[in-house]
Amino acid sequence: MALIEFKNVSFSYPNGFTAIEHVDFAIDKGQNIAIVGQNGAGKTTTVKMMNGLLKPTEGTVLVDGMDTRDFTAAKLSRKAGYVFQNPDDQIFHNTVGAEIRFGPGVLGYDAGKTEELVKFAAELVGLSGELEENPYNLPLSIRKFVTIASVLAMDTDIVILDEPTAGQDLHGIRTLENMMEVLKKKGKTMITITHDMEFVVNNFETVFVMAHKNLLRAADPGQIFGDGELLNESMLKRPFVCDIVEELGLDKQITSLGALADCLAGR
Image 1 (cartoon, helix red, strand yellow):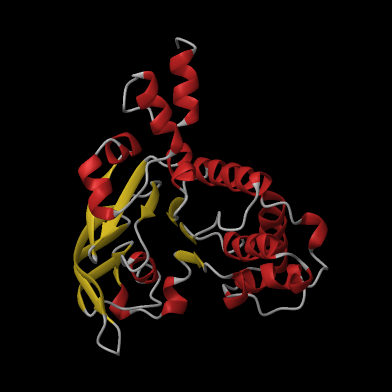
Image 2 (cartoon, rainbow, N blue to C red; image 1 turned 30 degrees about the horizontal axis):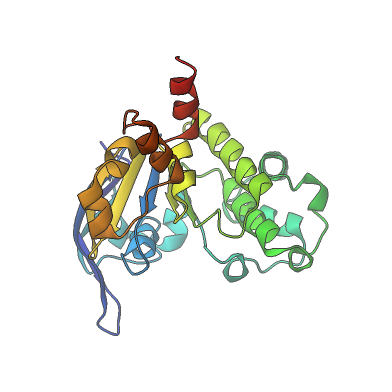
């Protein structure tokens, strides 16, 4: 059984705006999914239904077999942790440590387990030295890592990231990539909304392309970025490595810098 299932799911906001229509897909445990598409494609609405922040207007959303209509967002947050695009929508404690400890405390972990999870999350995102700092004394890019750590400390099976690379420098992106590799080894299911196509091709096995309030295609990066018609319809740009590959006349399935380097080295 899939860990997350959308069955003919539609969602309309109270003002009548329909964000997604008749969406179907399944995500298995341990998958690492990037969701891409233009603003208004329905990406954030879709992921918010994965942890119960929104409930489908039509159809069914199942998370680990649980129909999200039957459970509160608080209950579903034990299974799926969601990191908001804007960290200021999420932070409400006056120290980094208190922010990270909040989630494990709500979940009822004892003090020893909580401190173990806080230590792991803070180290993973480079915040070990900032636990006594007020989050709002930190730049936006670092506040993003505060909210990421607060979700990681809850130790959920599913981790949802909304535009994690926005505002990040190269060091921040490398921190994200290392974090994702560690979580992958721990068997976590990761779902990331992003407009950063370079980040997509270097870090994800499967890409969901959304447009016209629906899921157009789910495939590996090579198939997605080799499909010109799909890119035109969804108004997506190819990552720059695809342009290099085309200029060199190489296999168009090469989409990441690592794969390009291996090809040029004859490996």
